[in-house]
Length: 121
Image 1 (tube, rainbow, N blue to C red):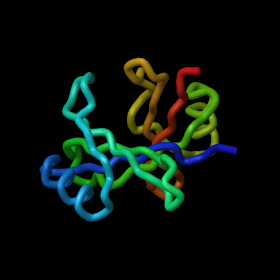
Image 2: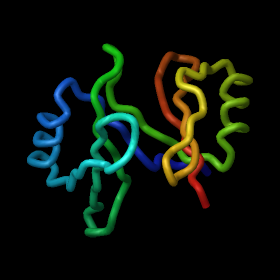
Image 3: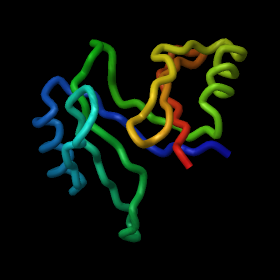
Image 4: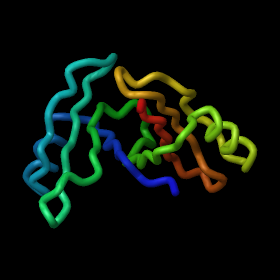
């Protein structure tokens, strides 16, 4: 079964958002060292103290961007084909994650945006 493995928070002011979430939830947020854009990784903990779903904060690129959940898939190519087959839309095509696999952004049949990730194994 596919699971949510990552979330992205879009921000007009990335450092302001970083401070907000650090102070609100106690999340550990650090700048990601590589990539084409400024990106901060978020580490969350479950109530048990174990690592939980991770996330990130980046500069808002579109006016309607909000929080996006990413679902892990075994094959990004097969998942993209299935999104299209079921009436969804690919809004950001498959792209490589540095040292990590592949990612794509989609819209479901109701216009909700979500992401899919195929992780390097």
